[in-house]
Amino acid sequence: MMTNPSDQEREAAAILWRHWQAGARIDALPKGLRPMDRAAGYRIGACVAAHAGEHVVGWKIAATSKAGQAHINVDGPLGGRLLSGRILKPDSAVTLGDNIMKVAEVEFAFRFASALPSRGSDYSFDEVMDAVQSLHPSIEIPDSRYNDFTAVGAPSLIADTACASWLMIGDAFDDSWRILDLSEHEVHALKADKIIASGAGKAALGDPRIALHWLVNEVAHYAEGLKAGDVITTGTCVVPVPIAGGDHMIADYGILGRMGITIV
Image 1: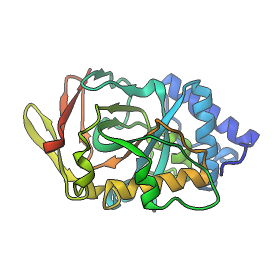
Image 2: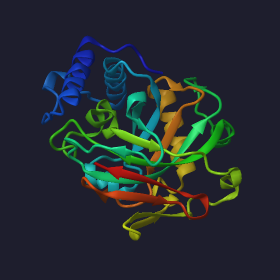
Image 3: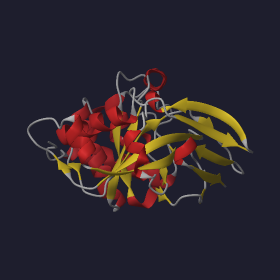
């Protein structure tokens, strides 16, 4: 359960938020303000959300694959808050602007029908799945407020909302998803009707539902838990796709459906 942030943690959040607003970057937080563990990272992330003045509408998971963890030099996945002003409607456009990562990720996202607040014990897998209302396609456009996000470490990345930026959430899939093996369900990213990246749900900690279970207990332990209506996007199923202005990318989930995003 999250404790109140310190003055130093509030100051760290203010620095990150100023850079987010300005489209600027820092090498790292000042030495005396850097979070030393996950708990501090999540407290700073909460203060970043407060500075934004927006509702937290859910969470993202970063680094759900071994390749993703190796790329940013962390030893496990990371959670980051999703802000209401950064959620995109299906098949809309987004401006890449000063984004330094310049990639799109194809992910499974779950919406919750009921809350899973912080408590003294972990939630079971069945408790988590029983609380799920629906499954959705999602396309994430991540970003970082650090010049080199591979060098700052897990606590500082968590403080920076785990590289959250834009997230497109599509309409709910048909409930038939509940009988599918999501770990083996193939997804594709397409540009100009050509497949440019392929993968499956198992890229997200072996199964998007496993990733979801991890996130629920992570934020119940370190943060405020989940509210009814929250959305959790569970990590990319494909190698992140390079994007640039003028691109139109399709996230194709086979029998479940597809969704597109335009980069301007």
